[in-house]
Amino acid sequence: MIVPESNKRMSIPSVGLFLQLFLALFVTSLNGLRTSLMNHFSIYPVALMELSIGVISLCFGVYGLIQSKYSALSWIVVMIGAMTCFLFVFVYLLPEAGTSPPIRL
Picture 1 (cartoon, rainbow, N blue to C red):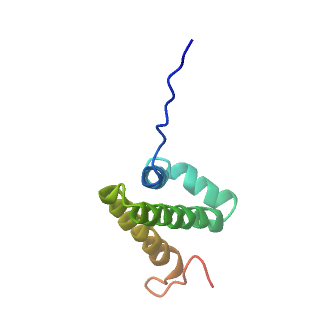
Picture 2 (picture 1 turned 180 degrees about the vertical axis):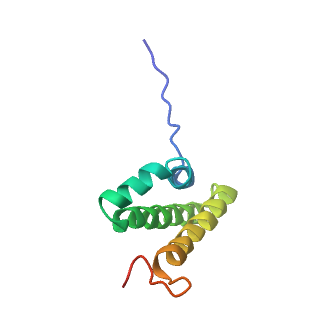
């Protein structure tokens, strides 16, 4: 039996977009799991996971721009990855209305 070779693999920017969709699900519909992790452990694992997903997807988007095969998708992944990194800074590192930030440096 001859099986045709399939070299179709997921592109790198698509993986970045998938990571961002997972993060959006984690923050919205899986928020109960997120808050449970914060209550049982601390805020650090959740914050570092969100930051790492943002940085990894940003790198995947830049890699896609360098390859310039998937230009529109790569720009979308870069913009959302950068917004995710900025969201991390605003949510976890900056004080709000006189309260100290959740993560102190």
